[in-house]
Image (cartoon, rainbow, N blue to C red; front, side, top):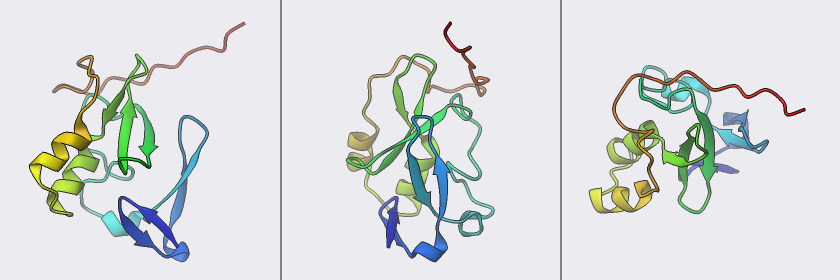
Length: 119
């Protein structure tokens, strides 16, 4: 049995995704979140919509990695935890605490930055 965002998922009800750092995570199938906000299948429009995703097992939270290499909590993951899981504001504040350079503030999505291989 796999878990994702604190929920148990039977193996036959999971899909896999490769993360930017080469790790693979199991997650719910697209049908499970159809029509709702989802950081994987239907992300909202925010500055880091196109940024790489990282999963933190310790905090059980998805992060977006900005072009400066900093982790910012994914707003759709925080929305899910608040609306669907009913986490209290205090706990969400702890989960969302991070070193912020302003990349996750309000605004239009920033196009992904592609780096050329070093020579």
